Image 1 (cartoon, rainbow, N blue to C red):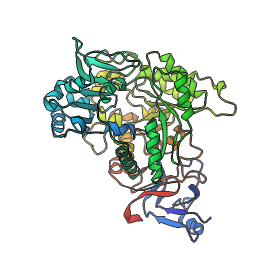
Image 2 (tube, helix red, strand yellow):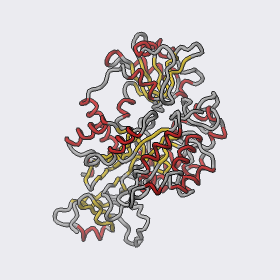
Image 3 (cartoon, rainbow, N blue to C red):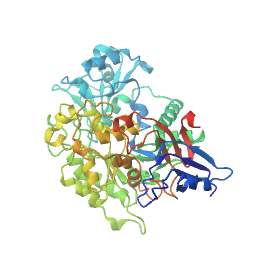
Image 4 (tube, rainbow, N blue to C red):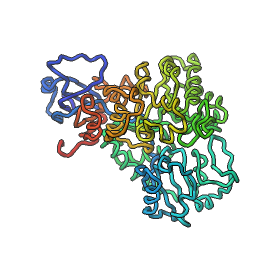
Length: 547
């Protein structure tokens, strides 16, 4: 065989559904040649594979899995969302104010912060007054954790010329009080952009350096791939620039946004980008939105939330959204749609159920289509996912980091007990035979995959055994959690034939872990280490003690 690389490990979880092994000769060796898995077998068999130029890496008692893939992440968009003070750990308004006081002004005197959890405000309304006495005459913009809203102070509103309500071509809002005076609370991208366009911008070199460091951190967390949900011309330029300096440390599958107000001319440009890319990145899907978030009142629900909000779709004419999905699907281009509320999910399901399969080009297989987030849905929706082969893309830490079992959090309070009890139905979807891909939605939540897999099993935040589980009957098994980052991640991308399991002929993308994710206690797994990652049969990251 004479492979380029052989990896030895005490435990190898191949996730190959058709692989049967002799228990007396367990799989403990994987051989790779030219970026492809060339052999899967025992240590004894590995002795027969090695040639004079074969490199052998012995990981001892470690566990080897197919390469972990984050199925929903924003590395480039996240560069903007993670500037300034990190407020993600603040649980009270007092802590928020203390962190903002410590934050030095950046370029142009702007104060920036991100990751703000509205639960920290308690019953205090989100209002610029809470910032003005801290920031004074310095402009400030604070991004909330959901990435769909922000709070601007009075100086920032003045610089942006925001003095009252605005009309947008999508569901966005400059929130105003009863007198029509802006409160500083900005909902959705179009509203936030009114302020952001006046803020100093980083140089391309600065952004490239930050993105390069972030991608290295993703690899060190155990990731070998990422489904990026915010592709743009800047993204392409950054990926190309990084590839001129070497290889990206993980595979990137990108999806540009298709937004309200666009038509076939714009959709044609997006479709033309599909399939373009570089050595380890490519544009492979289209990202759409039908609603916003429960937390800020912009989800699309059948019935309004506690405050009478979350009843409008993101596309003012939902039929235009359906037309866009049909446009891409009939050209064989996968779609991924952000849908959080029950009415939003229902509309996406209907749009996908009515796809004209006969309109696909001759010989072209039906594309894999996905719904992202799916935070609250009734029972009857579960079977519709399975019947149409629609992927559920879930982020377990949205549940465990931002909601509570007693329903005292902002998300649950807005929805009320009945809808809050339908929270993140990962297990019901899995039991129905639906492909459930998992990810972080970073920077909305941390990207490290092991804690996310642990949270999916615990239905509470890993490392916090004092917390009560949230809808514990929706907990995934250890295998289901691992599949969400491996085999189901591959199926969600339409790539099961070439990735997602340790199988001869598939891509040589693997993750080496200190502990076995199938047998280790979830809290212990979340705190354990990643030993290395391999992409295309090449070491991307490995602890120095193993080299």
